[in-house]
Image (tube, rainbow, N blue to C red; front, top):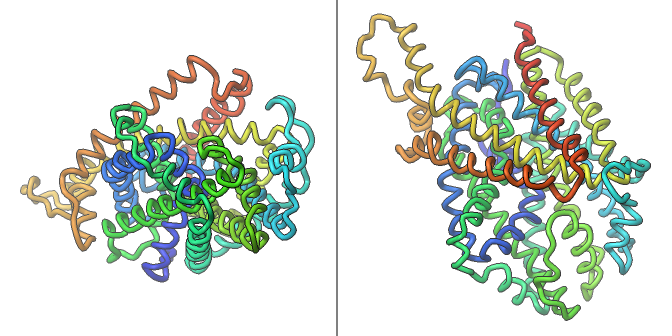
Length: 509
């Protein structure tokens, strides 16, 4: 008997938790600032309606209709597309290996928050004392055992969350989704009451409408929406496969998408209000204290926490607890999608798959705990997101947009060979859109077909080609070509090979 969500709320929270992650707090605000400030919300909302929500509907609909995880669901459209499903899951696996290390950093900094152990020079503490970073990716250096301990704690939490599949996931998400929302609201309220907060918010939201004429701003909007919703990982297909047959599809897709993006927008208030305070205290312009990624979370924010007039430790604990809970459900959603797929095809015991996944990913993650770990994390992250996910997004739209309805027609003809009214097949049988509409309180129109078949593949294709040309001109991040190959292209090639092997390997009946 297949697993089923205990309630619609469990499914919604799990899907939202998968989508909401560290990127909502440290990537969206920075991308918004760098691409026109408040004006960026216009292309961002357009991208959400023309790419994010359509693909979310696609993944929910496909998973719900086939009731099997991503590889088998895509394989039902056309057998060879099972490879695409495995490749998507492997991209998620690759991300998990370093995402868990970042969660390990959060565990460490949660402890550091108690007595503000990072001191006055938070940048030196993070890079020189905590990471002990080397000069280049090829200078591996030794393993940092404090980070390994954090990594181990992360995997214990992840495996515990998926121990019984959706039964435990459905319970855990009530904590890992609701708690960070509460903490985020607390941090927003605290942030906007600080001196200089309005200057930071003005910097975040002031529209620069001239930026809308720059095509790179529109590409950035599509890129942010695509990565933010956890689409293209096989997660949402797998989660939807656990829904009961009478469950809604379209409403759920809109609800999850808007909840995720509302969290991103709110996260900007939490971040830029305190950056405004930091600028006010130091006398620097806000533009000089805006950082992205790990630097924002582990250097700038700890500095700001130390400067707070009261309860600095409490707000430090709240901030890193929020990062942990935001990141942990994104991590275990990627693991659950992979575990469910392996269990479905090869009929292995869940306990063996869960533990095996954690051990393998944990061992791979050791590379990111070395002195050169941050460099490898940066390279692998870039290639997973800018090449792996984009390929999955394009091919997934192609698979459903050009093959799904044809297969439905063929199956219908086989099942009802004497029915000659082939062009009047019931709406719930022909086309994924019609199936989704038949399961939803409100329906989507032909705009969904247009987005899936044409608009989204074209825009994502442009993103992909643009990135390729950038890498031809110069290696990513100024790294050596050798490091770029090992941490980027080689990883992609290995995942493609493994996806083909998993496809060809026969499962157990």
